[in-house]
Amino acid sequence: MSEWKAGQPDSVAAGGQPRHALIRRRTGETEVELELSLDGSGLAQLDFPVPFLRHMLHLFAAHGRFDLRVQASGDVDVDDHHLVEDIGLCLGRAIHQALGDKRGIRRYGERHTPMDETLARAVIDLSGRPAFVLQAAIPAERVGTFPTELVREFFKSVANEGRMALHLAVLYGEDSHHMIEALFKAAAAALREAVQPDTGGVPSTKGVLE
Ligand SMILES: [Mn+2]
Image (cartoon, rainbow, N blue to C red; front, side):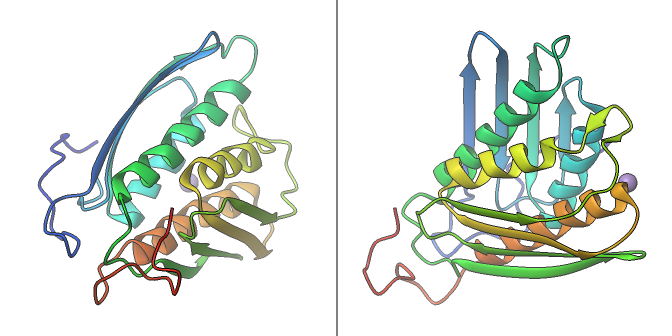
């Protein structure tokens, strides 16, 4: 893993300042500290006991060229559900907070990402209105120790707290690991596009994106 050095952006939004958020959240079930820089270089520092999600967030950071630090713990002796959901929630919250008033961004992003036999698609609108659609027939119940049904819980939390329309689909594929990995890579690249600097102003005819 690369050394953590957030705050050394290689691209910065129209406002000129690196877009960054630090989220701390503690409940009876989990404790999450998550730091996100949208204008990063793809670095990840991940410390929590869900190995497959670490793998996914590592490549999410790399393919979005975000810097992402997550330090989290929780009741994984029950199962991974709460921790995965709450890390997603904090990631969504960080995206929303880092974007501020969304002035000067593209707002929309989309990407198709193949991984060997699999093709995934992600389409994002940073609209201020949460909406989530996932179309994916993932054949395996688990990848490693990770319950594949948690892919839905994770991205639903990201969409809700990130106040975005997030449409994810696996168009076809065979291998469950490939399907999930292609979804995370596509989502990262689509988000990267959506947060990119554009010609200025808030990209809505209403003048406001919440
Ligand atoms: Mn992999």
